[in-house]
Length: 134
Length: 147
Image (tube, rainbow over all chains, first blue to last red; front, side):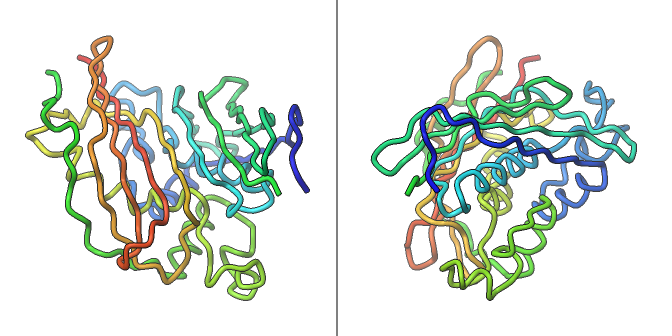
């Protein structure tokens, strides 16, 4: 299956809770307390505990791998973190939505623009992937 | 206080080798809610053409971010760690990381900028096997918010 220019890629939705942040902290080795300690997050001027930017990028990476037909098809992947993802202290957590648009598809490669939102607000900019499209 | 510009272009010696274990790959994949069996099941990974369990695309950060700490935290460079925000992140892959890899990182400070009262530090980390085979290049932009 190959991607075509202008193709809109199926929406991928991930829900993350405080427990997921703790698990990601352990798995990634990033124990910055702004990602698990409300008291600390508030003390540095944040509205509350926020997700690791790299957790958001990991979820975007799963969306891209799914669209590409496997992680090994992803050749280049970059994002800019523009808005923190606030993860409330409840069972619902935060819901992250990823959509993709194929910007180019030629010579066996495709480029995809990724849109990432939480509560309808964009959380990433310049989120792009280059994919092996064969 | 602006960052010390003389750090631009500085290349750091290779890090101590990092052994990528199967359980670490599984742990990371589980933590990001991945479901693709190539991250968990050896037979599925081999059937997909990988030599061992394959790590998710952003897995290299689990190795590269700890390796950045001593660079970003170097008092000579002048970064106030309490005001650091992750700006940009990019990976350019030669191949995905697989369990069994022994990886070393060679970091370079690619850019130091001051703009609008903020400082920006871009590092490039070449992740390669200890035998010198390139695996992935990782760019990390650190933003130091102005006071």
